[in-house]
Structures are given as structure tokens and as C-alpha cells.
Image (cartoon, rainbow, N blue to C red; front, top):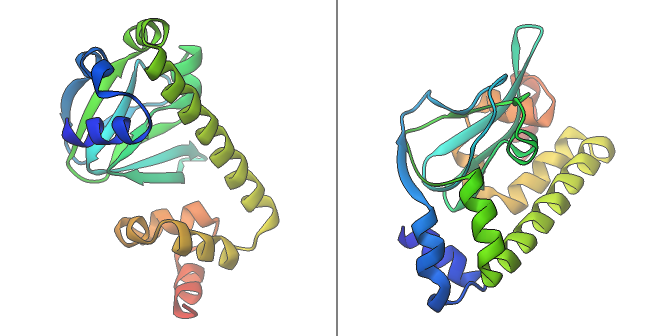
Length: 186
């Protein structure tokens, strides 16, 4: 809980309003290999990761296509499924044993309505998420795989060390062999 508290306090939620916020989150452990979100099932939770690593992926033609990997001190959700409350098109799986603080969709809606500081935090978090998604989309179109790798090296060096190579290759849109050539140049 301390990591979540520190994160929220650092993002402007005052200590005086923290009790209402933290009461809405519930602790959960997820074992390596278990799913946080699964294709075809509606995502009911948003979570804050205090420990672990998660892979976002789609299944296309029987193959996994990894789109994102995230770890501790970040939020976790199947965005479209959660906000539209409809079946997910993606999967989110734990790549390591994980610990999460989760909030149910209904509780999030109540908290947004009742707590102005949380609502401000929430809006800022969503804006940052949208900007990050837009930047990722632009990078996929504009940058080469080598340039995308350089961006990851600059922005996510610690996470880069944790991501299994086959998932990193998928994120970059290259084969593991091509990724090895890219990494040899760094």
C-alpha cells in the first residue's frame, strides 16, 4: 500500500483525502502465468503494480503479438474493455509473481464523483496515458526498430532489463535475431 500512497501523494492527492482513496483499493497477488485480463472477458479492475511484470498481447493467427510490458509502480488495465465495460480484445499476463492494489470499475466511478483530488489525479493520469499511446503509435509509424529500441533504452532502461527478449522483439516489430543485431550495436 505504501507504494500506492507514495505514488498518489506525489501526483497531488492530499494526505487528508487519502483514506477514502485507499479504502477503495484491495490487495491481490497474481502468480506468474496468470491473467489479469483475457480476450473475450470484460475487464472489471484497474490496478497499481507494487511488484511484478506484465505482458500485454494479442493472439493473431495463433501467435502472440506483444504490444507492451509494464512493471512496478505503474497502473495496469485493459483500457478499452475497462472503460467501455465490454469484452477485451487483448490479454494481460503476469510474467512474474505479482502484487497489485486493485479497484473495481464501480468503485472507481464512485471515487471520481466523490473525491475532487482523486478526480484531478485521474484526469491527469488518463491524459498522460493518451499522450503515451499517441507517442507509441507515432513511433511505430515514424521510427525504425533501431530508433524505437534507442527510445526504450532512454526512457525505460530498468524495464528493458526485465523484459524477455522474445517479447521485446515483438514490441519492436522485429524477429529475436534482428533484435540481437540491434542490441549488439548498443
